[in-house]
Image 1 (cartoon, one colour):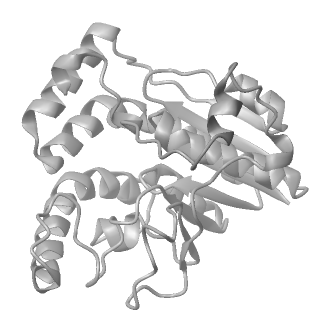
Image 2: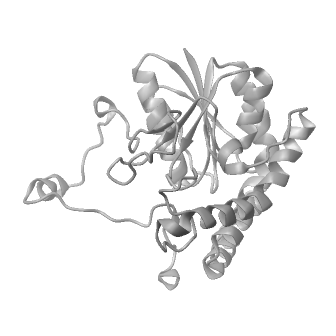
Length: 273
């Protein structure tokens, strides 16, 4: 089967897709991964190593290192996740939306099925237009509404507050995203979405939530299309990195260590901590 993948964002957004691509290749599929990295990282070595086709779609208005620092400073200073999302879209997504949509159309034309980062609404539009089955990949579990999950950016006051929290969060998310989403959908002759979290970010057939079941057990009000699949890593048979000197001995000695990182929010300066 020919399977197309499309990812956008930071390294933490894209790495699960490189792992999924590797696993699909090992399972015998022909895979193409379309990547828009927000700082222009090069994934060609991984594509060559794992055997899938890579199509980079760079931001035509790629900001300089100084501009990136300025935006990150604004994002951290704001502290409001909704305002932060607006900045991320304005600087990191909007300028590359049209090239991503063009790549999505090409990907759908060449694929039997596609899987997209849940943020990448241009792929969903292209898939609907082409009649190609689409699944989403979520790298977090709290962007699918549930009465059992605290909504993102909302203080956890207990389950009694979740319903109100989701109404507020969905209203704010729709305020930021729906005009963007529906501008493209209307232009392409598709019916406008009415809710981002349950329509734009959620496929009708399958939504993969790439989170450990130790962190997220599927709540009872999710339907069968929402599957917690665990963190995505390359197949062990394809992982051949040599560990730095001394690391193997350290990992083998005593109890397994626990590693915490800043992930996609890794600061470039201690002043952000």
